[in-house]
Image (cartoon, rainbow, N blue to C red; front, side, top):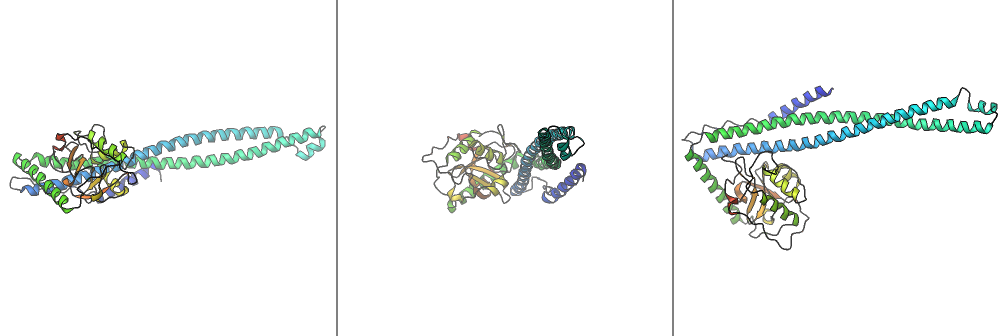
Length: 373
């Protein structure tokens, strides 16, 4: 199958898979003034969760595309080198063939030895011819191996490029999906009255406060905060330095972040790289109970693991909440908790720990990963 037809087939398969895995966003009900605020909030929660899920899917594809581009570059370099070696082998094989022809003559080595005036010279000449033949055989063998290697690399390079093109098309579709979902939310919010927006903000705040009280009184969260590891301390301090920077879907700093962009960059700057997306962080990193949380651990939210924040201690997290919001400090229960993971499970905690200073304004703004833009 040619590369063109392979790309078309892959693109069709991706489109079909997306139609199954990412169904269109359900139409939001008209927000008229008669609708209860709780219903409006439920719609917004669903819309933002779907938008964030689409964002994390986009991020995962972007990471794969970045790795694939690096693979294409690596294979291109290997292919160039293989072609250079092949050219050298062909040149050497030709040179040896000419040398053997020029030295061989038309008689067998035995006849030349019988007729030679200087038998020793004939023996030496025969030795040279034999060496040339053996060297040529080795060179021909290398030539055949170089040809096989070049052909294999060329096939791998074509396949890698086709995969890159497929991922680029998939990323574009996912980008458009995020934009569509966010546009639906924006239109709904734009149609709300000032009273409805105020009521929504109040309901969000009350919901978060109630969830935080329930979590702390249940005993699921420890009343004391153990010290972080040195890496966790660096991750926390990096995240705190980003307070006030805007949320931007698909962003991983340094001027803006989405939720997993903030957590992945915090740990990258701490010297412990972790996966880029919240789903990968939840799937790949060791899980830790909430009552054993220490600063720097990651708290993952929603059943689909579509939101993530970095634990500060004392029941608080630093996070990039949602579009229109800024990196801020929030109660850990601002969103439904799925669980927590620890990027450095074998690292020892610091013997002494002084938490970073948190500005009083750090908790201003929306806490939940859904709501007003």
